[in-house]
Length: 325
Ligand code: TRP
Image (cartoon, rainbow, N blue to C red; front, top):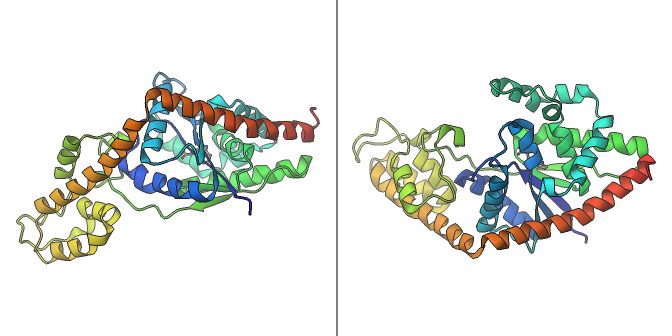
């Protein structure tokens, strides 16, 4: 049976943290075994908000690919490429922009939310409004049927389906209506208990050293009422336990009981977690060392050529259907 096609992407907004690893990358690594996968660095999407601050964009693209590879995304199994290397994304975006009603874009929940949240930035731009149109072009250019994304991206996949339907109804069947593949992403808080995010400065990065990990874990938020080792803990909001649940699944239940029973102190608990995290990051680091900068450039360039050959076919078909050829 023919493998289904998957496309997913990440904006290159800086180095990845252990939450990306547990949430997104472990899932991509599984999917590359079963699907025809395209994994894209969405640098044009980054421009929709960072158009006035582009100096790091190339480096960030390179770094994110290095992170993917060192976690186990395999260029022999998946096409790894950069969006702006394949100009057909922009071309399909333009064709789609002709038939996308403004109302669909203004009412998109992510649009309204971002305008509110990033109020210090001027996001009342043509490009930012069209963010989901560009995303639809990314997905449909490869006729992807399945799009692994987080919950927040559901409205964009819904819009993609609507754009596909509208295109097909005007010009003839060309595109599938892709499905979002929602994956159970484990919740991993930042070291202070808030959401793990670069802007909160509470992340454990994939490139952190052992010393970084030690210091960060020792700072992790735990039950503030558990002062001595023998105090029974209430670990509902304990960051250390949240990490054990994700990275040390076999022992997490016992750790929780011991904590509640006052038989495990926070310091010992943290030391155990440090070992586990250092092991994970060590194996990522070892893989990273196998990829020289030159090798990474090669992988991105091979990805470009594989992605381009599919993209060119689709654009040809699209222009034909519209009547431009
Ligand atoms: N909008 C996605 C995000 O912010 C990134 C992205 C761009 C994407 N193009 C895509 C995701 C296509 C899936 C498919 O996470």
